[in-house]
Image 1 (cartoon, rainbow, N blue to C red):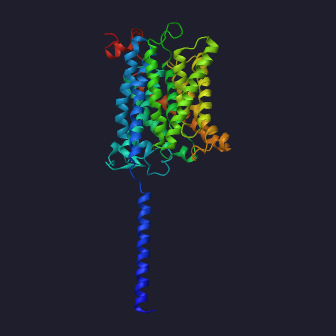
Image 2 (cartoon, one colour):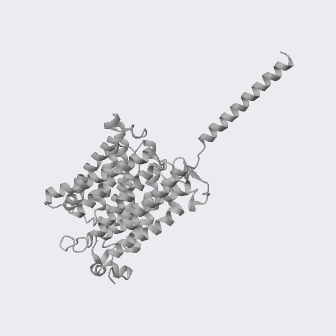
Image 3 (spheres, rainbow, N blue to C red):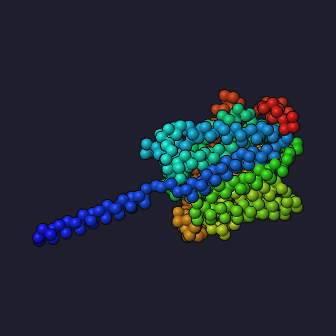
Length: 441
């Protein structure tokens, strides 16, 4: 081979290497996480919607259902929890829920402490296609509403100081580990449990804690003999409406992208909520001969709860089935089961959130469709009966761990500061005695 041929061959080889380097660089750039402005805009909106669910949504929903003498105390629980839990999530909750634990053995159960007070967070830190700071505050809104839901079971009789101690400890010791199990790469995620937006992590978790708390506190004075009807159902309707709208951020936002999955989750949420409201209303209409406004809004919330774990995995028909079943089952739990067993779940936190979350989690295993989300293959839609196992295990695990953890936390608080207000305070009202105010000063 002459010198000219060698130069030509060398040039060709160098050009090939250059092309290979450019191709590899392009592939690397394509694989590297990149901020998506559309996803970011959607998640900013979703975060605001989920915060709207607690204040003012849940505050008004619960506040309208208690007696007039306890309205401010009930609203204060939602507002106070929002402030306290925001700080705790920044300090320790996020790292325990979503960061890997350096100990391989512990990582299945709880996250590590590298992100205490969010110290490693930078302006350009990414979580997928959105800023990590946005993912943190989005998940913060979930960590706020979950403990706040428990207030519905202890209304009219729990000390405000005890409530704040409880929700703070419960976030760190119960909510964060369970969130890690499912969403942070823990053992339930490894098992294959499906929970799109928090049927087990949020609703079954909060509902179980609510059941334990109301049993430990005991019944309200006069329960079963005095009139404890809601003082202002208009407030509750407004609160339920805000919950309904905010839930689109809760469920569709859990796609963490502004795409097909978010849109289908939004559609599924609307269908299931409407179906559950109708199912509860019809059941009550048949049994009591009158469809109550309280029943309608309770049914809607039951549908929102039940579709939460399934929203990103089911088609519209699956959402319809989940809503209809949830409306009837939660009606039975909130009305008949509570009456039969005799516990005083003041605002039906267990009957709606606990039962609804469990129903939704199990039906997700039945109705999840790989045509909607490749990650979800259910028994009925894909013939994957094996998916029922992780769903049932997740329900049982959350119920047991949360139940035991809640009992221990409440027992310790009761020994230190006491859980329940004195009898005279409960009779006169929590507003004036705990907060020095009344609704109509």
